[in-house]
Image 1 (tube, rainbow, N blue to C red):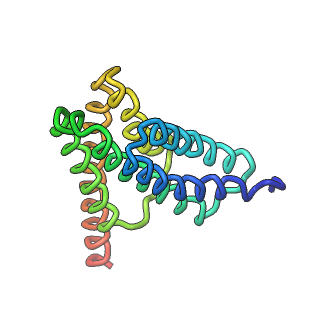
Image 2: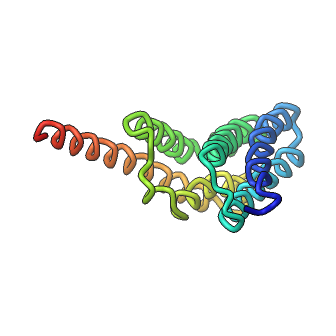
Length: 180
């Protein structure tokens, strides 16, 4: 194990701390502060997992910290956009509703099956957790709306897939228990 093996968990913890600061910046009407903090959360998110894998420092605590960092960054990022750019929210309300629906569906999927099988912890899930917060930057700067719209649609697809997968796995488990 690497002598700095605590660093990935520290980065995830920093991201959890930065998320409320991001909301405070939005509440204070600091667009620059919000954007800098959002960018910092995305950078720490990109680095923590790479370091944990490289240094063989992956832990259950680290996975939980990373998950909570993802949830807080995405949720408080959307709330921050609502405070700072209400006209964007009004214009993109359908995509915002789709994204929220995706998060709700993913939450239902996690309730149905709290433990993800190892096959669900790959780069695809990580990419999807990164896309929505990252897509906020071009959206609020009037560069492009399509990244947010695509990320919202992918989030909904992921949420629905989690519910279907959890339901199927629970049904299979009940069938196996009935046979045994």
